[in-house]
Amino acid sequence: RNCKIINTETTEIVSYVTDTVIIILLFALFGYIHSWLASNSVKKKIALRTGSKIAFYRLFYNLFSLLLFFFLFSLMPKPLLMIYDLPAPFDILILIPQFISLAGIIWSLRYFSLYEFAGINQVLRWKNNSYNENELDEKLTLRIEGPYKYSRHPLYFFIIAFMLFRPAMNLFYLVFTICTTVYFYIGSIYEEKKLTEAFGE
Image: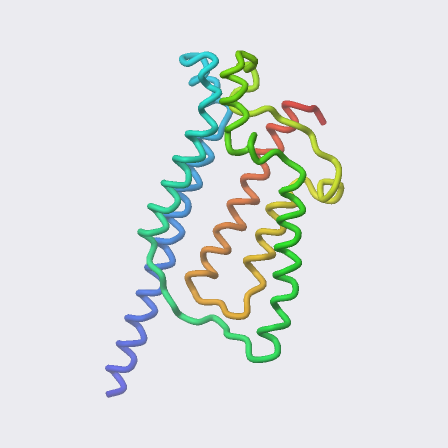
């Protein structure tokens, strides 16, 4: 009987480890494709072939990224092993920093153009024959007001904080949060290289 219990526990551990590895690999696959398609080297190659039609790249890039993310997300195993489940009143109190993080996300979004981010402005400029091919797929703007006074990547910071402050955490959500945090950190390094290239030190 004890052997059966040990074997069952071992099987569960192996299953959780396997699920964790699969989640990380699928997330890494998404991160690699997403970052590769966002690189200036890829955009410049496409611009050489398409000319001013590179204006459509951002819109298609966003749509493809969403479809790819949800496809890979659907393939991820969802291990429900509970890491913690806060009792009252801590389950309510932890929602306070989460709501603050949500407010920070909204605050950060106010300081950049959602239409430019989505790729809509680019298409409109292309229709008006005012698109600059040197912009590649977006017109960069240096923001140093609002939350950008304190952080170069406030949106990343508040999203990570929003994901961390939860009244309950299972294994899937923990691994997903860690992967997101690592991806944002690595992505910020590449984004800062783009900013330096565009605006200098």
